[in-house]
Amino acid sequence: MAARPGHQPLWMIHAPAAYVASYARSVARDFSHGAEVRAEEIALHQKYLDAIGRLRAAEADGDEQEARRLLPAVERARARWLKSNKRVARGDYS
Image (cartoon, rainbow, N blue to C red; front, side, top):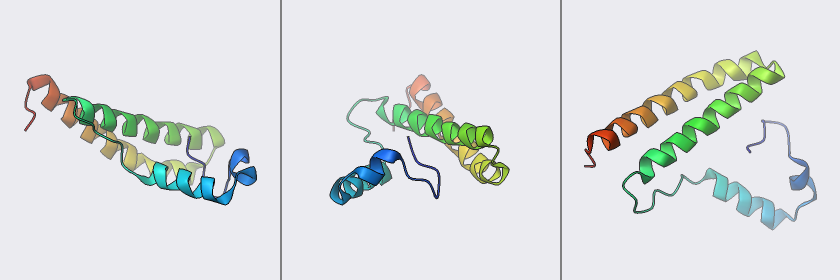
């Protein structure tokens, strides 16, 4: 779960700096697509779910500015996922 800007999860406060740095690098990387045909579609679906989760968290916190900022990213992630899903469903893997 990604931390909100300006907030740090409790485990990060008490974790060694090297561990926190490696965690930050791993979160920043793109999802691994692997060799599976549907892997890219699955990764894009995960990114969409992550984006919508952050949007819902901002809405639950009452942070309207953050929700407005995240909305275009959620829409882009959804469009990318659906486009990939359509390619997989039609068998167009190129």
